[in-house]
Length: 385
Ligand SMILES: *Cc1c(COP(=O)(O)O)cnc(C)c1O
Image (cartoon, rainbow, N blue to C red; front, side, top):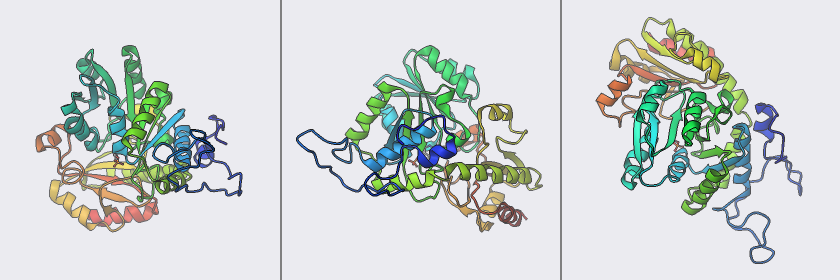
């Protein structure tokens, strides 16, 4: 089934892509191939696998499945989303320039400024919601446009098609970090992106028990370089982790629909709550880019950001009062999480930078899980009263 049609629905691909019953035993589930090495019939004569850093059957299956979901040809798996990001940045050369969005994932910005800048990679941070802001910072040395949409934590949307066109006219690459949306909500490669990166830690695995990453691309040169880096650097996921993500993927479509449905109705509830100053959710007509969300996304996702009346004190109170929403970083699992960007995920940003972005002390971010929506609503209601 490894050559299965890409025209199948995502629900079907999530379960079958890259996978078929084991020809020897009939096992329906993919085996976890823990072997580090593989027998060769003679020197250099093997069945596709030599050594598990280079390639491993369980990892190979996972790479094929995620690639199919993103509508791409090549999946390259890594031991974390950050390792996947680093591999992409590792394809650059000294003097190359990268444009990222102003509220790009903190770990991505840290890699760029603390690891790659000393090696000669240059970076510009701009509000990518406006095409002209991106054009204004582009240089002849610009090689990558790096986009997240929706962004974190402000859930700003960036127009993938427009930036794909811009990258195309300059002969450079557009990378989309699709961790928040997942291929269930948007498939960037089909909108003109050249590569998609994931922290599979989040929705793709979905059960908060794996740290992992993936890049998907149709660009043969890029894929070749990434496979080289995957093997040379060796930041590869374990076969067991690959198995867990494959298992999680089977329910990704069902999970994403429910995450989105519950998040949408909780966003409407919060929007009407007197203790809530504003709710940011791409599915609400009050979202400044709701029209783009409706055009670009097939689901509005499971993340809600809202600003409470009462600033830090109110945020502290709510975060220590919920019972079902666990106060923790990360997102995308079956369990609901709540966090305070200013003191948790975005604490490493200087206060002025946070203020500039709009990450106020009253801002909280919810990752809406799969518990009953009524129970989640009651939990928020009690914490807000
Ligand atoms: C978590 C995350 C990452 C980093 O992934 P890790 O698996 O934690 O290394 C990158 N981008 C986004 C949008 C994330 O949420």
